[in-house]
Length: 114
Image 1: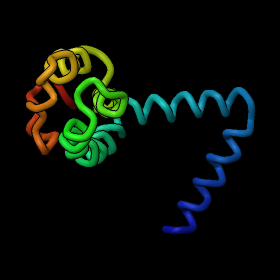
Image 2: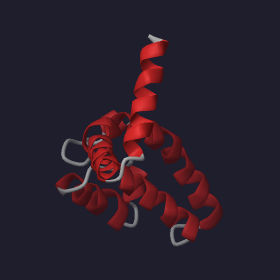
Image 3: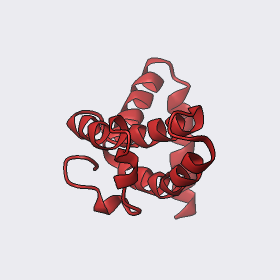
C-alpha cells in the first residue's frame, strides 16, 4: 500500500511541473478540496476556533481585530453560496450572533453549514 501511495505522490509531483497539465491538475485539486473534501477539514477547524471566540471576546471585545479575524476564519469554513450568506447573516452580522454558535458543527442548522 505504501508503494502505491509513493507512486501517486511521484505522479502528482511530475504533473505539477508539466506546465498546462500541471495547472489543470492544480485547478482540479482545488475544486475537489473546495467542494468535496473541505467538510471534514472545516468541521475540525471549527471545533478548534469556536472555543477561542469567548476567550478573545473576554480579552479584546467584539470590535477587536483578533475577534473579527476569528469570525472571518469561521466564515471562510462555510461553503460558497447561500449557506455562507446564511451563516454570515445569522452568526457574523448579528452583534450577538456568535454567541449562538454551537460547540459542535453538526448542531448548526441546515442551510448554514455543510
